[in-house]
Image (cartoon, rainbow over all chains, first blue to last red; front, side, top):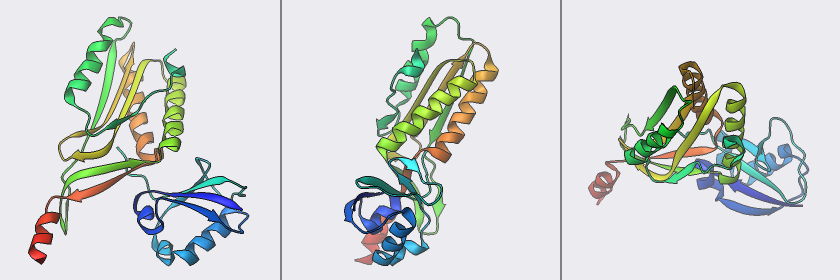
Length: 77
Length: 147
């Protein structure tokens, strides 16, 4: 399954800003496990996920071509 | 209706004081307004162990931010009796002492403008996918010392 992965702020410094993932994951929990394996530094970081521009509150099912964004705590204003 | 327009929130670099003055001026023709409330966010020179903040570099998740700002607008218009609402946020580099957030609400009576303005600012801080990277003033000095 293809997923577009975006990252921002200090998370982007670990993962890169934009990646196309071809991964066998069916929800956000599995995606997170995969990301933690790829980038162990992420484990100590605080961030939330947005799926297709909406904050993912709980485990969210992922579909082909979804966009998942890794969002560190906001600091605008 | 103002609420239906897609609004441009992001401004490249700092928000100039002239722009703020012009925004106020533009409302002089709207004679049903009795009160304006304005919030200006300014970049502060916080001091850390490793230096003083000289500037903040702002980035955003643009597509999501547009949605979030749109919802904040719609919900605030529904909740308060506002005549006008304007929100501007900087992207890119803003030096300490410069303005990075400008929220401007107008209403017939002051309570609506004041409450709405405060609520918008709090919601932006909490909900808008915007990030500020602090750039320290003595970073360069430290590099020089290393060589």
